[in-house]
Length: 136
Image (cartoon, rainbow, N blue to C red; front, side, top):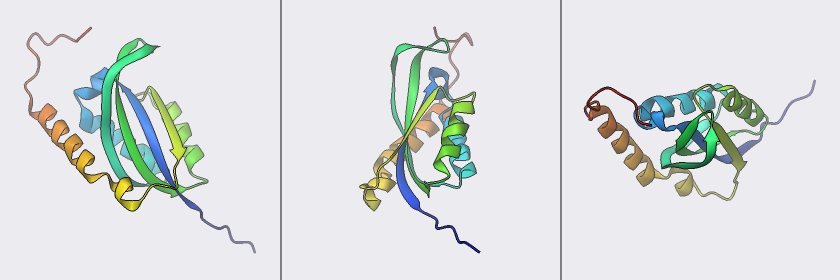
């Protein structure tokens, strides 16, 4: 009988969503949490990194919202997480890199996480744009 050793690694991941995700940041963050939990990862930090124009159109999107996360996971499960990200219809792109040099404080990134939660709460409370149209 053989035993398999579990190796836990520290990871950083950048997730790119269409600009429409800025209106529903909680929905985008919940989707990221769902993908990571499905891969049995432990999420330490999830923050909105930036919202900017893309270098080239991706699925007809000219702008995107980037989320940065830091998590720990079994090294064998990361391929499953990457696969789920590629198959996601909500996410445009993702990049996951191993970074074992992160300290516990950097993993938590508490102040940035609080700013992201505050922004998501403000966007939820904001009134809908007049006319009900979409931005081009």
